[in-house]
Image 1 (cartoon, rainbow, N blue to C red):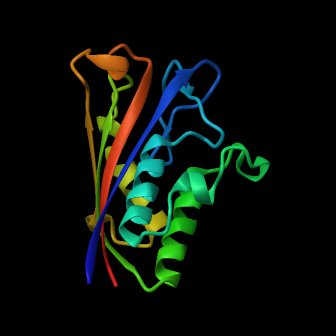
Image 2 (cartoon, one colour; image 1 turned 180 degrees about the horizontal axis):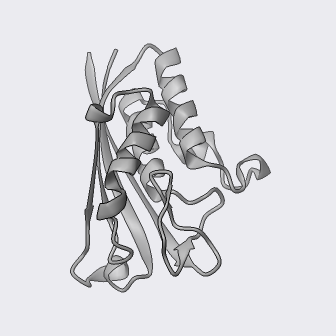
Length: 157
């Protein structure tokens, strides 16, 4: 049985924070605000896997009002999601994602993001796609207020 899941996440920019995307500390004037490290890409991927497996969402598993997850490394959380999926009999076959950011430029970091996500998921890097785009200066992303990410995951039981 094959299942597809979709994930979406958004975080606003904030002063004094790092800009962590796919586990990469991307040089940026501002970072992303969140209870964890605010890795919008890892969060979207986690929700895509959770959606495909019908095991909830990251807000349910790792609540933002739980001090245990304050400053948490989102790749560690993603690894826990992958372990949960496997414990329920699912194999993660493929993940594809898109990050929308007017700034910073992400192309130089795309391959490292793919590698980091693949490692966290326990799959080959060939099974993880990461794309980056802008919104042509439209919306909150275009105004450089934050970053959004979408992901899809294909799993098999």
